[in-house]
Image (cartoon, rainbow, N blue to C red):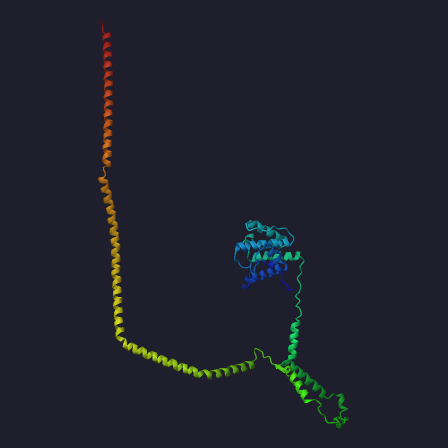
Length: 409
């Protein structure tokens, strides 16, 4: 089982360090560690299938793709991890208040003994360094709650590889192995040939003729059996020389082989290239001669074409100048037409006002009304004068009576 550093999430939450540019990609490795921890916790069966959610990728929380979806998956996964630690936490909904949900998650993270030094608003996107760190902390707490223990990696014995190596060793003899065996044989022969100091005293006493065999050595091996045995072991006597990538002898031999193949190919293709060059040269000469012939035959037409083209350019320039004057005059005509229309409207309004007898009728009605008012005022004045005359006469008669009564008889 692969051993991972479970404290990476705590280090990311504790502080944000600045260093080499490679630290910007540490969030991807942290996200991969998080996914491995979630697989150990069986989140694919207990979380993905039960809640019917889409399985996230190994770098899902490292890069922002869909903030709403990522935040909902982040809060749901964090709530599931909190429940795995043994605490109670309700499953978040899509329309819940994100601030209250984040506050509850941060309280659960603080219960694990992790220090938090970033604002809660960093988790509203549902991705990034802080979100991965929170999930790593909760995953570590869940692993501790499930009594999971990290072990050292124990690679399984590769029996198939050993069998292949043994078969290869039996079938092919490596050059180094051959050299070692030859060196061992030479050393054994040298040990047999070397004279020891203890045997020097017995060297003179040994009889030279006693060392000779009594009978002539005759081979008892059947030639046909020896040939069959040789054919049987011949495939196993194959020697494989493994040349290194930096061996200059192999490089030189390879260069020589390439040079020989190039020379062989060049000898076959040189004639074809020469024929192709001759054909192309002949074709170019024919094209040039035909071009000269066409130019000589079409010289008059070409001169006429140039003249017509110059005339066309002159007429085009003249038309451009004339059209420019027409445009200016058209603009002036439009302005004069607008002024004429304005004058016509004024004249029509004045003519209509002069032919209209409505004001005269209104004046006559007003004059007749004034005359009636004057007549009524004259009647009122006459009545008032009559009343005043009557009062004066009454006063005069009363004064005369008073005088007559006051005089003596």
